[in-house]
Length: 313
Image (cartoon, rainbow, N blue to C red; front, side, top):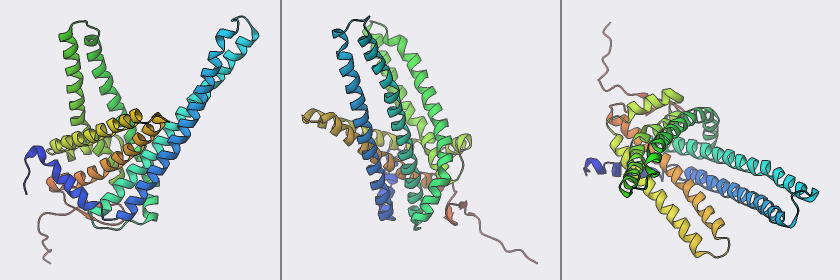
């Protein structure tokens, strides 16, 4: 069945659904571990930050009862200042925990999906070794992609901010339209950036080299990648709206429950993203005439498309 070019991404989604049962137990275990880690770190972060903020607010509420020149006022002020490093360290720990979960889920999702695509079984030992070797490459490539995303974001903000300061409704509407178009364009150009992460795991390249090769691989297939990004972002939007509904309908600890819901389903979408992009990677290689064959734990090479000719003595 042939799809319209705008719906070619459905082939990738269809192949992804076929791929999921292969190495299904390992992929399920990886997903479960990622969700458990996300939940544990979220609960720790939520409890710690809430306790610290509550303590700071309690101390701040006592300020009106004390004179600004008294020793008691100075003591309370010092108590609040002492809490700031704790709050900062809590947020830093949360970011580090997020990076650990991101590395784990990304590397395992790409590795298991690549093996499944080639009908190979990946053992836990091989997966652990793959994780250790891939972490530095993921970190470096992620650093470069973060710079690109940040630079693009600041560029768009610098263009839109002057327009948003205007009181003219037409100019404000133009600013909103500009932001929407900028985000749509971001979904288009970020195809190669996400693919670079897949390459960092699968082909053992990183940084500028991974970004350059990913741009070559998606050439001619960027529209399908763009449609995949739209699909994944709509899925993320649905999860975000669902978490808001939970927050609105829950009286007790609604914010905590909705936050846990958002964190876990965001983790699921992230794993799904890299499973889909791994399938998309192989499809792009196939479209470019670079069929791949498995040779060992993590090395794939190009299969010659021309017949082999034996040498004549």
